[in-house]
Length: 128
Figure 1 (tube, helix red, strand yellow):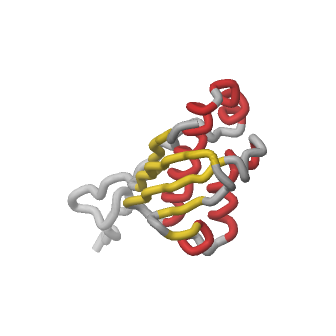
Figure 2 (cartoon, rainbow, N blue to C red; figure 1 turned 60 degrees about the horizontal axis):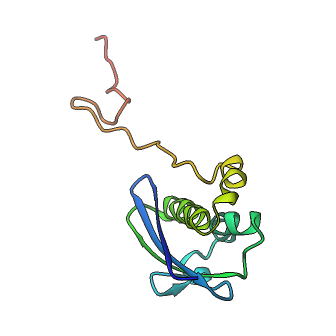
């Protein structure tokens, strides 16, 4: 198997990954997964597509993550991994889609409006 690349996005986070056959090592920005995401919940989110297909120890993943916060980055990485697994084996797409790993979350932060302190919050109204 040659190197497979894929892209995942969530909010402002962008994940570019490169998948090769290997032992299950996940490297993010030249750091180990446990170093980059110390939270076990975020590590679980990243590994979800691999666990679903029992492929945790089949592939080595190198990822470049930019932008966003740690939650958005982990979810962008999950989408990229799912897309790469579909490139490797197209028959896995239905199982990944059923779990919701193939859908990009379209929600973005709403912009701040002029004359208001936030996007929807108004300044306090004073009758007198």
